[in-house]
Image 1: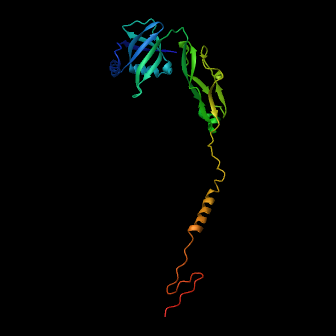
Image 2 (image 1 turned 180 degrees about the vertical axis):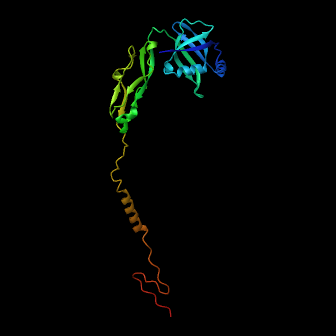
Image 3 (image 1 turned 90 degrees about the vertical axis):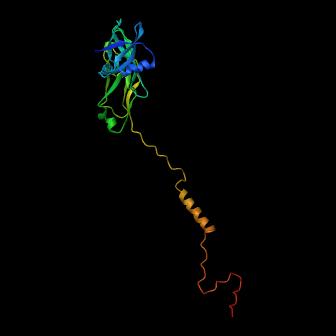
Length: 245
């Protein structure tokens, strides 16, 4: 892996206000430490740093750090941490760790899927499950792979790729259990349909029946009124009234 040279300046860590002033000058406040070195507060050019992490190596890029006016015992560094501002989503602070090119380090390498859109399991509606987006490995700084590729073109539903099936470069040791699943294609999810509750279908009929019974008891139709000019029919058991003379 090639290294990226980065020029930096030492700074006096005077709190938040000083750090804001550094960022306003298009610089990122940072600190460099490790390998027996006392932590040193520095500032690095924002544009150059962004260019470094946008190489193929990404956040695993090796940086040759040159600090103005300071001679470092070891100048090769790796990015230990990038702190982001939760509001602006911009870089707030960077931690650089000094490393030796002859000592192994632990890093996380991104997983890249090849031809996943051509996989039969995906074409049949299978569900993609990428369990590990990064793989933790141990190796020399010069042996850090840019990515770990998985050929997924032939994967079917219920197929899986395990850690022990990954193709790693020579000298790179995986730190995840060999039996763990990295990638899998699951069967399509079926929508759950709840069965109708017993007697639910008959419920409208019961309601309708009850309604009719109610109508028979309380809502029976009224008797027709007598036609105009005709006396009303006598009530049962009573004689009709005599016509007026």
